Length: 114
Image (cartoon, rainbow, N blue to C red; front, side, top):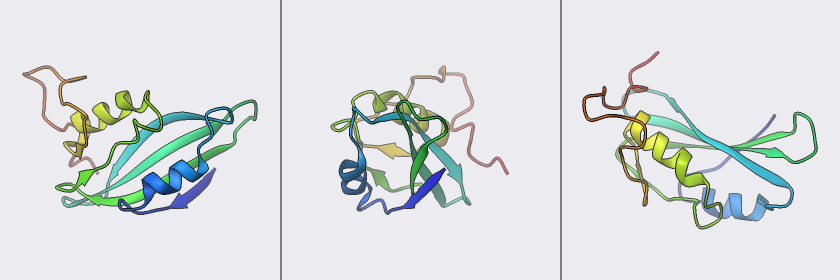
């Protein structure tokens, strides 16, 4: 796996320079809680027709920071973005809460897990 460090301010530009829909499949947006204030976000891609060629862009964000969406580049990313909103309670531009969690579910169930 290739990991490419980026920032919340530049990841859209970095991904747009990298991403070619004919070469790369967007797999998911993943989150890893660092502490009660920060999360590492990972945008993960797999190359079509090549076994085990994975590229992940990652950036550190504050939980109270608004995260830009990549749906203008990759429309299907909305599902991963909405999942991250539900599971971690982050604020991603245009991604609504309520995709996976019922009203009586634990809120942000992946926060606080060590």
